[in-house]
Length: 355
Image (cartoon, rainbow, N blue to C red; front, side):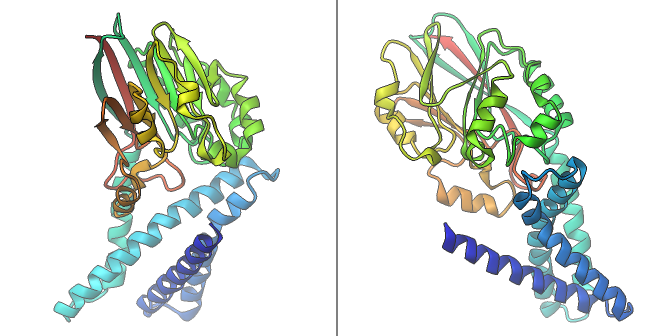
């Protein structure tokens, strides 16, 4: 983990230095002091995200923390796409030497693409799957969501929109597959988001497993927050809802956790909830009827989605693993940058029907 962090930091600082130099030279029609101010602003934005994460549990004004987090996370995507666009225009300039202002055009193009990505992120799509089983005697409609990341990025207003979207599906049951909380419980409690979560309407219950971000936020604080809601938290435990057994696995960040063999009953339709899609093969081998994961976000933006597809055997969508139906959600919301470019925010609806 430490070597990866060092590599990321070196690459990130190098990319910011390169971008600052390109913008500084592209603005040669302006006074030097103006260009220096621009470079200082770039440096400040490059540090915002790390500052907001490092200070997440410090009692600073909520508005200041949200501004730091949002500016810093937006800068991540701006940095990536501006360098890609500048590289593209460098290639075009090599072919067409008369092209001028390539760097500035690249910046404008980057801002346009990011605006489209923001609009796309704000409009999650509803993905529906229907499965039949002889273990089911009457139809059940289930909504599954993951990676909401409540906090400075996904605020109370965004959560209200998501709850309206969930209730519009008329679910019998709601499953939250980890990373409900982002980096700290503090902004979630300050915005009293438990009041909004308690508006979810699901007669058969709301069930949740933890993800890696619940551990980052502080697992004890997360449990205290969830206790204020109608959500049933499953950590290596099982909830029975009639003929359906919901097996909620603790996140792999815990280290040792119970095996699926220890948890899963044999006399029910078994739904496994595991935030990270690392135990799919175990679920399939033991004959789980349905396995649901999240975590990947499918990379959130292109070309990071290609990396996610390479890392995870199933980074998104529905596949059949032996006799198990497996769904990996790209997430209802996201972490950090509020953009979906080449990927979707999604709410998953699962309809279980008798065979």
